[in-house]
Length: 222
Length: 222
DNA sequence: CAATCATTTTTGGTATACCAAATTCAAAAA
DNA sequence: TTTTTGAATTTGGTATACCAAAAATGATTG
Picture 1 (cartoon, rainbow over the protein chains, first blue to last red):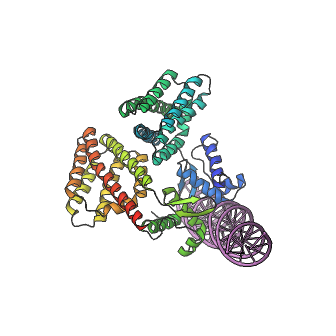
Picture 2 (cartoon, rainbow over the protein chains, first blue to last red):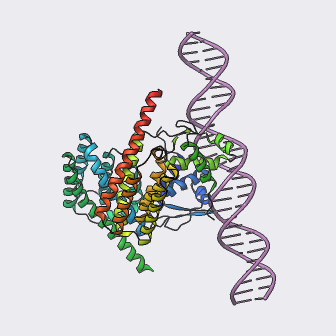
Picture 3 (cartoon, rainbow over the protein chains, first blue to last red):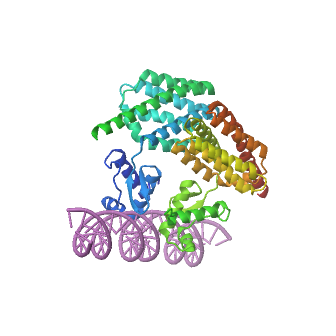
């Protein structure tokens, strides 16, 4: 069991191609051609395209081929704003609802990051970091928050991918994560909010820097 | 222009039937039967069902008929939590980004509510009230917030429908809305937050009361 | 040469046919 | 009578055929 439906498989394949740049923004997704290329019929391909549209990766146009979305800087920025707000809310709720076991797990993730920060691949480490943040969302014990957080993280994959390549300040990340875990253990909402605001402020700045760089690069190539 | 696609029309029809109780929770949605009933084929019906699944109104089960969802009290409560957080964030952003024209429109909506509160149908008035709140989300000038707000409001339609039948305190609503508009005009984030927290606290309580009543009613009928 | 209109082609939307998995129900055996 | 098994039916998943609208192409006319 635990199988993935055909449309989901197709969606995953397409998602990969889009995020890796094989299908650059603006590319048309013709359901007939793409279906033939993957050896499936139009029906599941159609459904896969709807899934990606829901995720914001492709844009549906009435009576026109769907195209790969080109998220504007503002869109990404808006998403970051909401992501940060969600994480702050998560942490507040987690201070009340998180179990001790969950906090232990979070601390373990933090220790893992601490010990492997220098040796691991920066991209892998970024994934672990995002796992840390998603764990916070889950610890809110509010399924809507956890789900939205997941969605936003997926939509921000490309921006995160770019941001992950930058060298990150190990001390800063570890110390900030530690402050968050300690505040959680103490069930201290005020301290937790201070800690996560400091941490997320850096995330915000990192992503904005990447966006600015990309915008400049785009100008130069014109 | 402004046409609605066939799947959207079907989805709207089904949504209506579900929310009005014609299709109670637990009902199976057989795509063949439902398609025939509406005189369309399975393909658009299938797509309509996916739309409703995305909205959380129906649950898809692998290799089984989709069924009308029965949102648990916790789910609704979780949604209200996020809705409230989004509105608070909206208001903060609106203090910075809202245009004077938008604030004027908001004030006009408020005046309309003030003058028609007693005469209009309570349900209509509740719709206007929700329009007021969604306007706040739009005034954040953050499309992600506006979209999420819309989605949550749709998912909470039933709870809102129930809550709308209760007699509401005119003075309270008008005064609270007025405080919000005034804070916006003054671009005063702190006052705005105080005002909306007071207002949303009542919304939260209203919905929780309805949920408790429904839970009790469910117990009795068992 | 440019513009416009008709024709052909492309493409998404819809209907339908086919298949496989799952459920149901009846018959047979214990 | 109860349980088991297998055949028939139901139902979602997939493939394909058809249609209408939109786009592209090209010919014709000013």
